[in-house]
Image 1 (tube, rainbow, N blue to C red):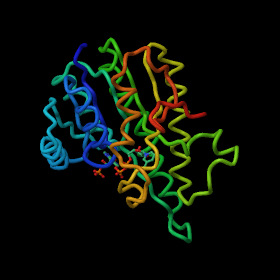
Image 2: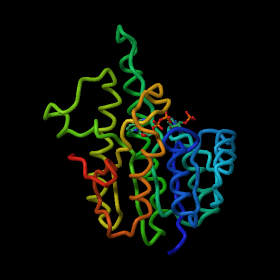
Image 3: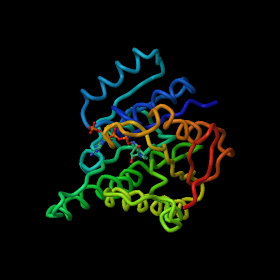
Length: 244
Ligand SMILES: NC(=O)c1ccc[n+]([C@@H]2O[C@H](COP(=O)([O-])OP(=O)(O)OC[C@H]3O[C@@H](n4cnc5c(N)ncnc54)[C@H](OP(=O)(O)O)[C@@H]3O)[C@@H](O)[C@H]2O)c1
């Protein structure tokens, strides 16, 4: 199998860190590029991964997903250092609720939609020329089953205070659907890790984030024909499609 270059945004902690850990444990031959806001957080993550016995090639790419100048620099750096990109995993995201009086409603929505939707569109677009150099291009957008319109409209989800976050995840699902219509030779997936214990939810999730990473490991490294472009989760020991 050809060694892949796999970029994970927000890889310094939470599910992003576990995606790199789980991928490197199951497919150590690939190069894992940790997209991180600060070099020091990337270095910390790499030493933690090394302590866990990971010996894959691990690289850091400084990448604030909301900073256009930085994104352009990161693309130039990645082009020079790696020459191609096989898999882009858009994992980094934020969740933020407005104050009880909603006085910061606009700023909250703008921040959440900027990080979780606009940045995914901008980063995917910016890295596309590099992704097209791969013979097996894949883009995996980390979303949530809570972004499923089917589940939202069939009474299967309880109400939430995190409406802006939910809107952002529905939007990133639609973004993925539209991009895959334009680029039919690219595998475009949406992945739901499930409710994991991370900083995003005050560590209240039910799942270990390493288990949450399983769906992404499958989508990133399985034979190309195994999973068609879709909305996937890994539950009860198997890959399952999530209704859009
Ligand atoms: N946790 C869950 O239960 C759950 C469920 C469904 C889906 N998800 C999705 O899984 C993904 C990972 O979430 P998580 O739970 O691991 O969250 P997390 O623990 O809060 O980690 C978020 C990551 O995103 C990074 N990030 C945020 N803004 C950034 C920016 N502007 N530039 C670069 N990196 C940025 C953070 O970096 P810093 O350390 O620099 O802030 C951090 O690495 C998200 O897409 C989330 O929506 C999570």
